Length: 446
Image (cartoon, rainbow, N blue to C red; front, side, top):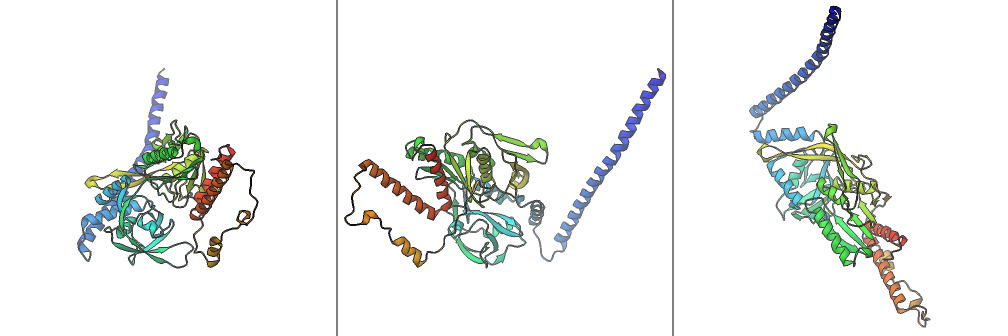
């Protein structure tokens, strides 16, 4: 018995010795890391003091510290940044849907400012700025070497003032200048209209108003068409939509889904991940949906397109989206500033991350660039086609009733309207053609 106790005691002591031997290097390693961090912070303090004491001009210490903080955040990725108190307030105003500026959503790539998308009806949109454009100069001053916030500050100014930006565009051999007059940007989150028998929902941004605007706009247009039975389908136009609030993207997706996952987020720690699921209820009651996307569709737009695509609830048409698959959390800081930090990636219901890849459309449809009409094409448009009906002395068609003739005339007018839309917006016309085809297959001839 004494031998057994002695063996047990030796075993416990040996176990404690092994644990101590393993833990000691780990503790030493952690202590070394902490020591290195403090040494680096001391180095930062030394540099700060040298700048303050010996730089050729007086420096504002507040600006210096803010620049250091912003440099630390912007070195992580293009979407993490420090927000000064003014910037934090401006961001809150933007999510409410009204602010001053040019009307473009931008990011940074290779040191230059890249346009994610121009916003509908804004000065930038009217001036012809396109998604994918690079802004290299603002009023002749290069933006190379500036942080994104600094470049944006250059573009800000009083409403009514003029700004000249230099643009580099793919397919255009030389940079060119664009003059824009700054204005107050009032965003209508969703514009609804009827095209033929389809309801077109143009979603320009995901702010506090988006879902409410979408629901009311859809219901209004359904009533205008005389009920859902007269609706061939819905076009959800997310082109040049730079995104916005994750909560609104989830609500818009949920509006057309009865069940299943909408999006999931995964952060650095597995336990921080979240899943967002649809609730029962489909505003469209199963009517077919076409989602339009392009290279200016980013973030929240991609969440919606990806969710409806993965659930086979919609046909996605257009070109590949922007590919912003990360989630930014805005964290308030002392002094009324804030920190925008990338904290997670989001994933579509099938588990795919669209970070840097984008959402690929089910049907790839390019938007042709409008070219000036030549004299030949103008002459062709102005010269009406002649038919049997135009010939003098023609025979009358007495085999059709007045109602049948009226129906033929209505079909002809609808076809002419479709042809006109195809010239104005080829992608949208394509989407409506899809809905009409599905409606015909289903036996609804609207």
